[in-house]
Image (cartoon, rainbow over all chains, first blue to last red; front, side):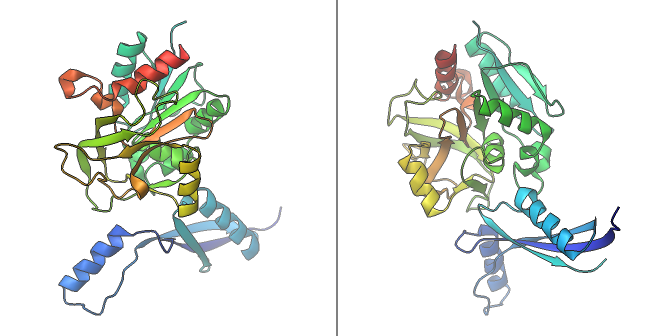
Amino acid sequence: MEARFPMKARITVTLKSGVLDPQGRAIANALHSLGFESVEDVRQGKLIEVQLKATGEEQARAELDAMCKQLLANTVIENYRVELVGG
Amino acid sequence: MAFKSAVIVFPGSNCDRDVAVTLEEITGRKPVMVWHRETEFPSADLIVLPGGFSYGDYLRSGAMAAHSPIVRAVKEQAERGVAVLGICNGFQILTEAKLLPGALMRNTSLHYICRDVGLKVERADTLFTKGYAQGDQVVMPIAHKDGSYYADEETLDRIEGEGQVVFRYCGGAGLGDNGNPNGSRRGIAGVISKSGRILGLMPHPERAADAALGGIDGRLVFESITRELQ
């Protein structure tokens, strides 16, 4: 069996541009009321950290991509980005 | 032949019993209550995915349930032509499971909204709505935080073109809003599959099925499907 190495991935899930983000808007309003008038827009997302074992980066990426498509992101409304951040 | 129905019960479901009471009253037969750990269930004419907060609504409303073994079994039944009705959380599950187009997002107000809304019946020729008349305006309650229907413009045009929009928010006398309580695209409140056998809606017809509870406008959903499939 091929050796598998522990890896860690950081997955960022964000709403697609054009999809209204009412939570982001509420955060922007709150920042304005705190005096941060420089704020023009806020978009909120999710950060998901996954620890996994994989034979290599390529296999890990393929698997993480499948995880995002099937469960972690709803691609009707969300985009995702996968980063490998070392074991 | 008596009409057979099944209600799927997830941890966090909270409208399963309301649906069961309504179905029993209308069909004369208790539905089979199917716990989420089951992977198969007895044959049924109708499967209902009830409202609630399945699996705590972790990740996204309906996302966990959509990938549970029982929903895989429901998918198989749906492919065989069994009618499926998803109410509120059930609608969220059906979109997450890709049995219906679109997605249900956080209400634009960010509030959990629990009140009656006016609905327009856009299609009175489906399995679930034949008891209504086209264009009927009815009242049912909504109770959700993630009910803002979203699909991209292309998908919206397509489902409108295919006649898949069954219910639309329309406001109405005394309901005090512009008709769209949650920011749904094009005011969409209920969508049916292309096959015409899977309906998802955010309003709760089972909570508007007994005059003692304030209204009976939702009763026709259950009466229609029972009459059609009996």
